[in-house]
Image 1 (tube, rainbow, N blue to C red):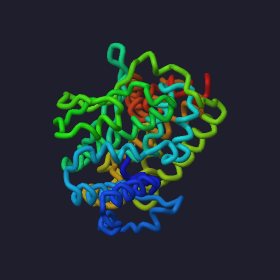
Image 2 (image 1 turned 60 degrees about the horizontal axis):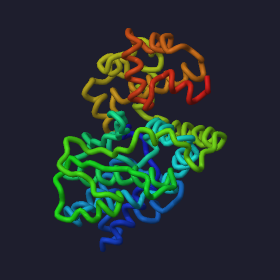
Image 3 (image 1 turned 180 degrees about the vertical axis):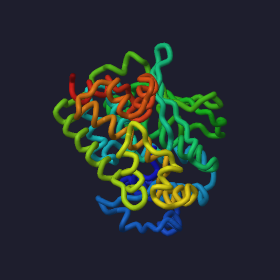
Length: 338
């Protein structure tokens, strides 16, 4: 998750609705965020991630540790809440490919969790963590994000009885009814990890509203929307230009600072003020160029790795999987069919 990329205000609007139903005023919910409810309700409005997290902090601080508050929040996120991203998911051919698309365009979601897919025996699992979220908000955020994915999965398969089971690393609450209501089954608590799992053999069953042409169109819109939101300005744009000028041997933070006539400390502080970091800009540059080289430039995986300064192709492939949710060869196949 890139904290510098803004997101639709629709997620904040969902939180405002949750807070209203719990008896909070809009002023309480949006206090200290610089947001007002009229702006948030505008269809094209965007917010910074830190603003949305501040909204969550206001809600948690005002309502306390109410049982099931996070999962009730997550159940409010329908496919329609996500706009074109939701359309890309619903038109996917299978649940597996919907997951891949979801991870590829993860910055178009409202999640604060990190979500890692994996296969264990006959199960497909999505593991949820939130290392960048303050501990006091972590349970709410993880429960909300997991419940939102469960709600999306139910909408995608159009089958309320399709099994999506949850496990939580948190202690079992006194009342598990809100959890059973949202997930359809009683989750497990006190586990080693927080995850959502489903039968592996159900991942490749065709989705009822699959549409190859609509999926291609929606994904193109997702790419363009993400590029627009990720467009840099100010110091971040100047650093990005330095990195892009020599992707095979990008300057270190120290060298970039010297080229911009400032100290390394000043560079880091000023980037942080813009919601960016040198490391995030470096990864963003590599991710963007890798996609352009593989898909647009039709370079091989090895050629792309070399042009981005990777000595080992395996290291590049691992990094690419972190950026896009799948390996480079699979990404090219999904994007181009070749």
